[in-house]
Image (tube, rainbow, N blue to C red; front, side):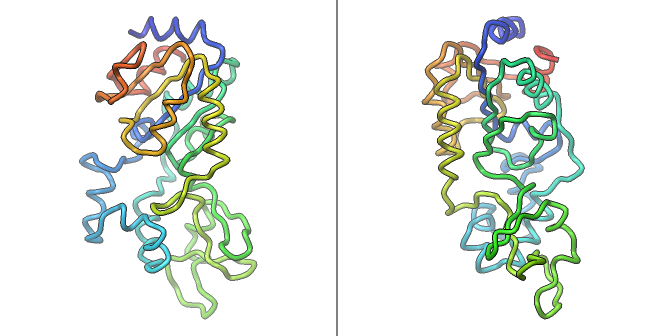
Length: 250
């Protein structure tokens, strides 16, 4: 199977990679439903991740939202794995045209990828909801930036310019995906000659539906478990994505 993937990569000139949580779990970022995933971490709050990561919960329970967000969605110590570095290498070689990801951790860019369409946003970007000033991850994690106008301590980061709330540039439940990101992802996938899908079970919509825009030659699915699209693929590899891409590219 590895040799077959190497041959597909060798003959391809417009590869697009579509990835999900499984790409980041090999770096130590938990997914939603595994034994050490977000669902288990949520037991402390007695609420579901879908509720706590919704826009309405963000607005009505902001301090609790940020407490959960900072403790369960931010992993500043993690580093890119072989999958991230392999994709960056393919881009450097001129073979890979874009990465489309459901992850919000910024690991693709950390590994060197430049053309990355982040369907669900990124924890690395944060904006004031009032004046739109930009802040990085360090800013919202610094307790000194979480004092409100009255000097009260909280988990909520406030804008140093206008005092407004700083919100992560992450798509919450009840929020729509960014249309420009969707359009660029669709454009990349529809023009690809090879689509490599990795680390995703392809059950989260609308993101999973993007695979239907592929019109190229080779569809490759790399995931530890089966997906509903396996029968449509030219090649299916049920092994860890980092192990596979690392062996075939690096």
